[in-house]
Length: 331
Image (cartoon, rainbow, N blue to C red):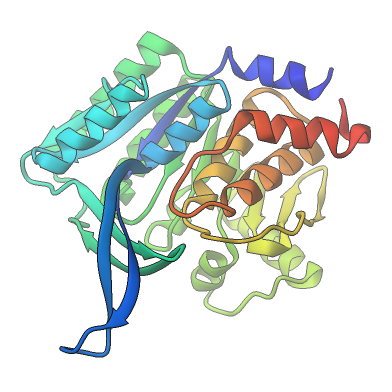
């Protein structure tokens, strides 16, 4: 089987993406002077745009790789929530899994960009855990999506915005296991240790350091020790630690090691983790060998950092790099 056949296999996969949905807004302009009112740049407005963010960006990456995402989470009964759903509709992504709450603000991240650089970000959000009614609605929506679409894999995408609370995680994981749905997790610190017995656990180096309470270096010795600790404490099947420009460290019961990534011209690291978990989950669902799963995830994540803002992976470019730059990785 070759990479083209792997990507064809992706087209038959359904991926349930559960987590914190966001709206990413961008104001682009240029800076030609410093404000006389304060020592800050004056940005002359040029244009604005908005994109689906957070777990919705994971769904965009799933779709970009050819699979079918099933988005599940919360939006507020507000203008931002309406805009997020409209953007997903325009991308032809199903919104049946999105619950609307009059008590929650749709998470909005507004970025000001000039000269290809992010000058500031303004966040508008609620981070409280879901209340009991919201939790019930989310679990019911998950049950419906599983029954109607039979997903091949689930991604729990946590940004500490309240959707994936400890109570929600405690209800979700048994439902997914009972229905035979493999689970991939992109965690944050608050509920880091609640994600037990999952199939793939994907923290980054900073998140691991925060969780274990000590600085973990991006060295084989440190990473071998800390991933062994994670696997023992969480009883997960595999662990993929992203290391920014140093690549990733992978461990399961058959393989462990550091996988470097190609050097890139980094413009913006926003959203790279979303791309990595999307590619890794598809690799898992498609039955890729561990080395190739990590290669796919590494390359996908490194590709998107070359662009400003949160953007999904480019399927054609990724396939070209996988097949053209190194023929020995054909499978």
